[in-house]
Structures are given as C-alpha cells and as structure tokens.
Image (cartoon, rainbow, N blue to C red; front, side, top):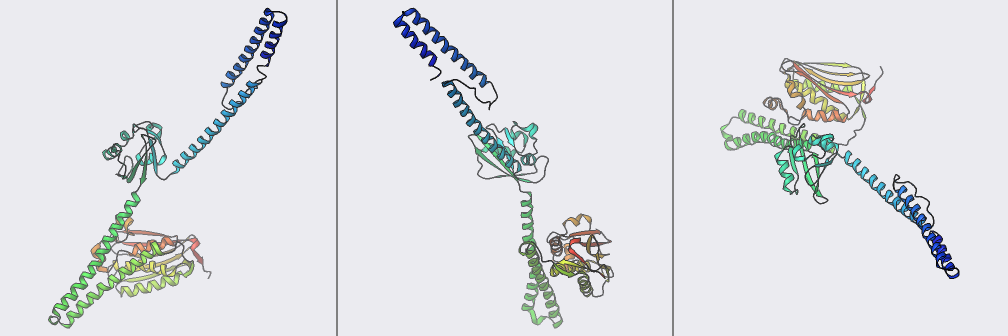
Length: 431
C-alpha cells in the first residue's frame, strides 16, 4: 500500500483543489501523481531486471511497500526451486556413483540406440570408450549380428548370451530393459566364471560316472562269469577272479572316500581350521614310513629333515595331503627309482616336499594338475590305482592352511611337489 500512497495523496489533493480553486490546479496535481507513480514503478522494474541478471542465489533487492513483498516472494520461490534442484542433483550424482561402482555393465540408450551414458564396467564388457563413443549407435560399435537382432527385436523377455566380444574373451549375459518411453537400459554381466563352473560340473558328473562304471563293470563281469560257470574254473582261477574283483572294489571305495573328503573340504568344512600344533617332523617321518611300505622295496627312499617346528593346523588334513604327495611319487616312479621326502623349517616359511626321478610331467599339464579327475596319462593312472582326486585334495588343504602348492617337473627326469606354509603357521622348537 505504501507504493501507491503518493499517488493517492496527490489525487486527494487534486480533488480538494478542484473543489476550492478550479479544475486546472486539480489536473496539474493529478499529473504530478501519475508521474511520481510511474517513476516509482520504473525504479522497481529496473531493480527487478538487474536482479534477474545476477547469478542464481543473489539476495533480492530491497523494494518499497508492495514491491518489497513481491521481491521477497520471488526470492523465496527461487530459493525453494534451487533447494529442490540441488537435492535432485545430489540424488542423481549418488545414483551415478552407485552405477559407476556396480559390478555389472550399465548403458542408457535413446530411441535411436545411441549411447547416452555408460559406466566403466560397460566400457570393459563391450570394448567401448566413453570419450569418443557417447552419442554413437551401440549396434555400430558392437558388431555382432545376434546382438543387433536382439536389440531390434523389442522382445527382451530372455537375456542374450554373447561370446568373445571385441578386445576381450569370455561370455557376457545381456539384458535390455525399456524405460521412459522409447529409452532403454542395457545391463551386462560377465558369466565366464559361471560358465567355467558349469563345464567343471558337467565334466565332474561325467568323470564320476565313468570312474565308477569301470570297476563296477569289472566286478560285475567277474561275478557273472563265476556264477555262469563256477564248475568250469579251477580254484586258482576263481581266486584270481575274486582278487581282481576285490581290487576294483577297493578302488571304487577309495574313489568314494576321496569324493567325500573333497566334498567336505569344498562345502562342509569350516572356513577357519583349528590351529592345533602338529609335530611336523613326526608327521613327515610317519608319511615316509607309509611310503616305504607302499613301495615294498621297489624304490630307494630317503628322508631329509631340517629344523624342528610345530605346524599349526589340522593333523588329519595335513596327513592326508602329505601322504597324497608321497604315494603319488611311489606310483609314478618306476622300480629302481629314488624318492626323497623332506621337511624344512625356516624363519620365512615351512616346506614339505617330495622329489622323485620318475617319469616327470610335461610343463603344459602342470597348470591343470589340481583339477578334479585331470590326468596326464589316463591309462597309467588306472593301472596305478589313482583316482584323479589326490592333487585336488592337496590343493584345498594347503589353501586352507594359507600355504601354496609348488610343482616343478621335467618330462623324463622327475618331479618335485612342495607345500609351503607361511611363517605365522610355524612354532619353532628350540633345541
């Protein structure tokens, strides 16, 4: 009201002057009131324009009367909008940071399949570069016909599996999700490890079936032969058949026991083992004695012990791993060969090893030796009674004890298998 007060005052004076002196004086005063009001309006409009040109967040000007109220209302409205905008910007930034850290790839496509945004994992999965590939059509960058057909089909009820994309090997699972009209979000996940695990599972089932079918076939064949013609065989032949059947039965029993052991190590065993102090030297001597019995005089065995120490861990598991390496050396070293079993306890680590001068292993096979049922020579493994699970068990046990399995071998010259345990797992024994 204060903004129109001068105009009203002049108007009242004009009316009084008209009543007392005549219309000319009233008209003059009325014109003066209009001019004063116009000047006030112009001044406040100028303040409004100047304020509008200032950066967002500049305090509103101080207007007079009603204009002051208008400036204050506009300022408060702008401040609320700024607060909302900042909040939305913060939420968007937080979402983008979360998407950046996602283990899956994320791309946003517009209605023309051009890339609007991508996270680093999507760059890695599809071999893209955000510095030059943004706003480019994705089908032009990922040149796989099945991907282009999937993107154009508009049927995204099932994910697409892609193999060997540009600049990377492996397998991707891709899923497209439409949103906001014609825009789409492309999610990618690296399923290479899952695919490898599925292949391992498939091979495992096939190998178990084969390994158990063979001894069962032998046992069944011998028993059927004896049942059909027991009177046609001499006592020596019967004993021979039953001995072979017993050997196959023992082999199948050992296979089942090792499968149960491996299963317990992989799934049933606790993540942390009890740190029981195990007399390492005594355990190594025990394993060496067992290897000597298994060899039955066919090899020369030697024992090397350097340093007394207790090894923290599970005695049952350590005995299984130590004896596995020793029995493998006996099985794969021809008669007359030499086998060395040793233990060394130092300040940096403890090491158990088995060295032989047997048939050796081609270095190409070494990375896969600890896979279940992997054999360098399947025929020889069956002849020696191996199940193909021993080294897989050893690898699990040494890993559970924070150690590592080190394999050195040369074809035709022998092998050395060593289990190395970190210093924190040793308790040195003073003489």
